[in-house]
Image (tube, rainbow, N blue to C red; front, side):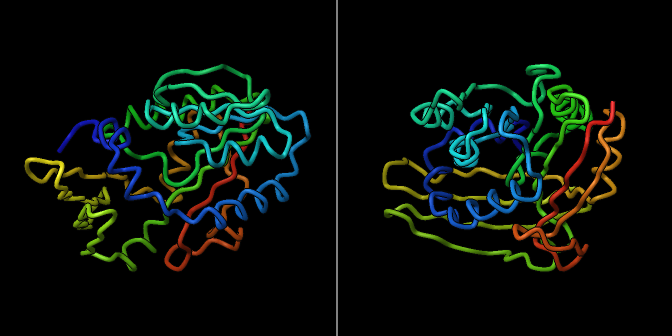
Length: 246
């Protein structure tokens, strides 16, 4: 298993091809709903941590907020930079390393962009970055998969063909992680290649324990992009709203 699978996979053209048809309408409605609920002031400073190509960042900026997006993927940031605005900025940065301290009013971590790491220390470092980036009384929003729902609704085998590239996807889990192996066959390749995504099976209680040392207190928990009530088995998402209390 690659120690840092995400470094290579997120910079691969195949990653961007496989996930090119994400539901932009759903993402847009989620941001609208979230901002209506949070009601941030117009001068709020926002960080989109692990921003990818910046689709959420751009929507937040279009609402008039000053937004900074950071991501480890050089390819994603290069694409995001094409959309920079006076109030929208992008940087290549590893979330496990300190970013701007006590600067932002809101930090967002969307679409299960946490829990990739091998060690508790790395997860802790990433959470510390989120906390340190916030001003006191600032708000952290984490949008994560819901482990109970993911277990019950997992499709273990799937095949896709996109522009003559064949993807064979296998999913499974153990006590601690979810795994997704992607086998890729392409005429451009001399032989098939594969990547394996690995994401931690964090529960709500796990997040409480990770957040607590960094002064982050959970205020609200939602179960989907409509901000419905959270259910441990039935909700597709685990969306956490936390406040930096010190």
